[in-house]
Length: 184
Length: 184
Length: 240
Image (cartoon, rainbow over all chains, first blue to last red; front, side, top):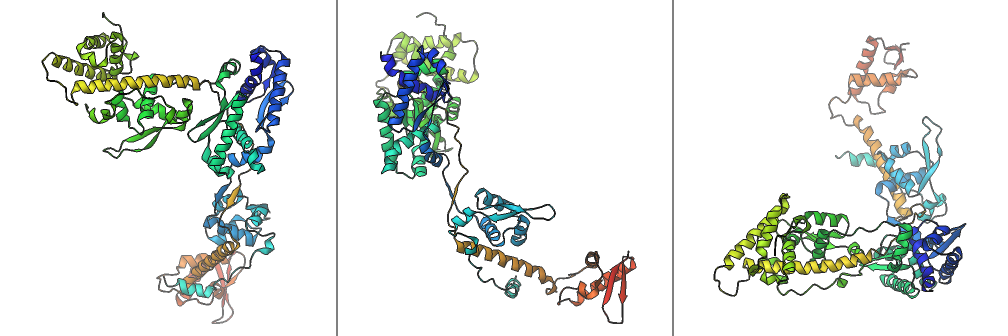
C-alpha cells in the first residue's frame, strides 16, 4: 500500500514537529494503524538514520518515540549555539589580573588599595572569564574572599606554573616620582 | 577529509536543534567553514531528503537555512498535534506587502499612492511580523524610511529568493506611475 | 444595474471599490468614464451610514475626482488626453492597483502552500559555560600592567606626602585638624610631641599649630602633658 510506503516519512514528520516524546498508542489511534505497523516504521526510520550516520537519531524508550541529535555532533552544536567569545581584556581588567597574579591570594580590598579605584567590575569579569577564582577567605573581619589565578590563566599566558611568571621590570624609584609630579 | 564527509550530518543536527532559521554566515563563522562548504552540505542534505521523500525538508530562503516538514504530510501532523498554525495575512497587509516586495526599496507614501488609502497600520504590522524591515532612507525632504522585505518574508511564502515571485501583469504606463501621481 | 448594497468596509479603499464595480460591469478599466460606474460609486457611498473619518475622506475625494472627470466628458474635448490629465492618471492608478491585486492573490496561494510546512521549536540544549578566547594577552603585557599599577601607587603615595614640602598653600594645618590627629594617636598609648609631627620635614607652621592644638586640648581637659626638663620633648596622654 502506498500509505505504508509513506508511513516512515509521516512518522518522521510527526516526531519532528512534536519534539516531545510521542506515545506509540497515540500514533496508532491517530493514524489508524496497528502498533506493529508503527514499530516497523520506527525500525525503518532508525536504520535510515543509522545507515547515513544522520545528525538526527530516533530515541525509543518504553512506549515512546522521540527525535534527537546524534551525540557525536554535540561539540559542533555547542560551537554553533555558543560561539567562543573573542575579546581582549580591558586595561583595568588586565591590571586587576596582574595584581592577583603577583599577589595571590588576595582580596578585592587589597586590589583596590593598590589600584586606587573600585575594582568590583574587573574582578567579576575575570571570574566570568575563568581567569581567576575564589581560593578561600581571609581570616579577618568580614572574612573577605581571597582570589587566585586559575589553570585557565596559566594556559592563556602559555605557562605551566606561576613560578614562570616573569620578574617585575624595574619600577622607577619614589624620589624620581616626586620630582616629576611636582611640576604640575 | 573525514570532517567533510560528516558535514552534512553536522549541519542537519545543528538545524534540528536550532529549529529557527539559521544564518549561513553564522554557520561559516562558528564552524570555521567557507560558505561554499556550507552550501554544498545543504545541497547534499536537500537531495537526501528529496530522494527518500523524507518527512523533513530543507527550507532555504535568502541566506538562511531551516528544517521543516514536507507539506504532503501536513494533514497528519495537524490531525495529531494541532500545531500553531501560521497566521495568514489580512488583505490590506498582503496588498501592502506585495507593493513592498515588487517595488523595494519603497516608502510608505509610495505605498499609499498605489493603494489609495493610508497604510500606516499595515506597515507597522508587517514590521512587527518581521516580514519587512527598514533598509535605509530616501534622500528627499523628510528623509522618509525605505522598506524592503526580509528573509522571513521569503519563508512565509515558501520561496527561496525574490526572483520566484509571480510576474507582474504587464502595464505599459506603470513605471511612470510614481512620478506622475502627485494629486495630494 | 440596480441598487447595490455594498459595505464599504469590505473594500480596501476607493480603488478597490472602483475595481469591484468595473469587474461587476464587465467593462474595461479605460471605459469607466463612459459607463455608469460613477453613479454606482456615488450610490454606494451614499448608502453608507456609518463612516470612519479616515476612510471617508479617501472615498469622498475619489467621488469628486470621478464627478469632475465625468462632467468634463460631457463637453467636447480634444484628443488625445495629455499624460497628466486626471483621467489618465486615474486609469493608470487603477491598472496598477489591479495588477497588484492579481499578484497579491497569487501570493496568497504561496502563503497557503507554505503554511503546510511545519517547523519545530528550538531544542532546549544544555550548553557548557561560555568560553572566551582572549586576544592580545602576553606575559609582557601582564608584568607591564603590574608595573604600571605599582608606579601609579608610588606616585600616589608620593603625592600624599607632598603637603609638607608645599608650604605655599595657606593654612596647611588647622588647630581642629591637629587636635583630631592628637586624639587619634592617643587612643591606645601616650605619644610624644615630636612623634606627632610629620616625618623629618615638619614646618614651622606645623609645629606652631600643633602646639596650639595641645594647648587647646589641655584647656578643655582632654589631655595631660608632662615635660621632664625645659626644651625636652613633651609627653602627652589622655585624661582617663
